[in-house]
Image (cartoon, rainbow, N blue to C red; front, side):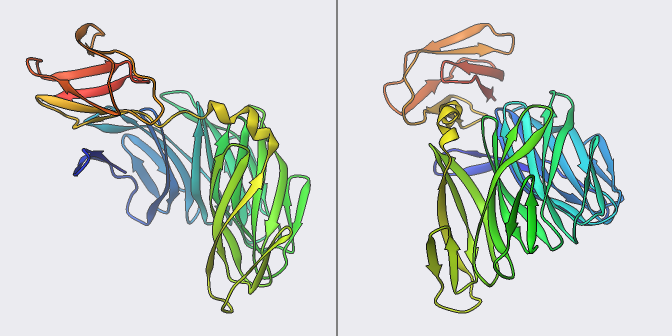
Length: 350
């Protein structure tokens, strides 16, 4: 896991951290909330190090979810958790909402442990969606749900809005269970999109939809906007149905990308809570000057630069445009906070 600073026309690495041990360890997904950076994947090493934290594998590969704290010029692991069983288990997707961290993937273990929750595999490979609660210096699994049937079923993508958690992937099972909903595949593999409702200590499937044809089709990415759930992936079927819409592929078994949308009216109550893109402060570290870039639609406000103890050291007028230059001349080297542009921005002065 590594961090770069984007200075507009150039970029540079600020810090990097390794994770793992002597075998194959993969980081497959990232999510960021403020200064908290979450990473998930799988580890096959007998013991895998995440900073000062060591995880021990229970099978051939286990799921891991870890949190790093970005302190500006440095980043360090705060906590790490494993999940899985005796087989090969992997995480492919992450999503964050407040202190809730959601992870999705697949497990081949006959039984897979996610904290106090144990999932039973109904086939050779089943998908999973799990929630962890980030308590700051620690993180723990709150709940986990299985998806699939007797075939090979994967969860590849996640998106979250409020208490609504959306997951996408593929299923080959003739009958794949998503809680009380059962989907029947039309061919070798179908794409699916499902919604879970997070009730805090529990999470349950609310609905599930399939798409595809007689060959291999799968969903790979999800995102949300307004009442729409957007899903992207590929189809290999010559004719793949998305409810009443049919997409045709010009070549048999050739992968053809798709983009589709579903409407979920319950999203209207939660979409407004999705945070704006944060302001950008660069270069960081800086010397004599720094530039503040504001996201579109931000109302300008006066700015205050404080030292590490919270004492104001310099004030700036409200920005007149999307970018404004900050004069740092005369300030001693150290860590500062810029306030007035959304969440406080850390700034290191050399």
